[in-house]
Length: 426
Ligand SMILES: *Cc1c(COP(=O)(O)O)cnc(C)c1O
Image 1 (cartoon, rainbow, N blue to C red):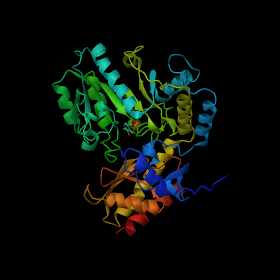
Image 2 (image 1 turned 30 degrees about the vertical axis):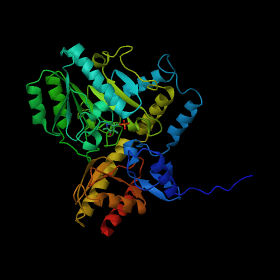
Image 3 (image 1 turned 120 degrees about the horizontal axis):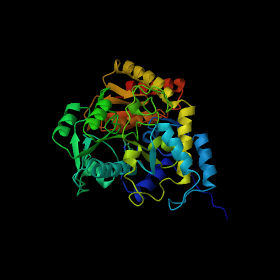
Image 4 (image 1 turned 90 degrees about the vertical axis):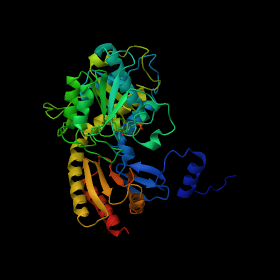
């Protein structure tokens, strides 16, 4: 006998998560069930503009038909072989990836944190085997307020007490210096021959979209070269067109990977990618490097059961094709300029928000209140009621990062929502 099942409400789903899931996140009270392009819908059928894009993992938009098509097709063909055998997708993907980003080799992994761990391991091994640093003495320079993921090693050099406290003992071998401060970086290099690399986010996303000076990346690259250390760029959030170029280290170039001039491009020794590498359809991450660095990795030294699986590889290949074919870097650059102009205009009309910053479609608005106040959170709740989803980061900063497939008209509509919400807030 068929019993009529009552549809669960948002509250039901929130209660279920609270009761049965670990409380390692504090989500906005919105329960989503469907996504398409720049939109998501909640279980009550309300439509929202997504201005988080899963922390920039869905740059290509939700459920992009080409990416989903590839996912379905490959899922019905072959999903996982492990690397104990070759498969017919990984090689073509690696060729495409390395040509796309201009490196000799790629090492495929799954999540962002794993890719960062991979880069750290490669860097250290390179330090001992190529640079000649004494074993276990290698040091890696990182920056204050960094975010590189959640593993034990990575949180060992976090500045965030929540991320770090009571998870020790920590991994040694990291030196922290101030972000965007070339002089302190020069100083640590001056009296230390054991530095094997520098790990940096070209824009610090989680810290509140901190955009460094234009020359910061090139100065890091130069200091690394001078001191025989590896420049590691964590582009997990900034990469794949988010900031208006294929990579944030590309500076002003919008070539989307097929560039002749690359005059503003600073090539990292190790490039770390994740998030939008798969368009949000499947966890895929990667580390790219040239042979003199990547050759320190030999059979047995590193790996992952799912790393380089045919499903992830095929999805990532398609996700990169979409970025190039739909000119998402160019669109992010154009819309980013419009967004910041609109926000500047808003700033002049209210004291509630005091600053807008960012690059391409990775932007943040700073709320004029204490970092510990709940103002930014409350604004985000109001924004969601008005049909736009954004999340505060570091207390009083709201990040605005919609999918890059947004149209100019949609962006203006979103700016209207933000403006109305802020001006009506009290
Ligand atoms: C999200 C992020 C990571 C971690 O990626 P996960 O897939 O969550 O492990 C690392 N670095 C940066 C800059 C990120 O934004």
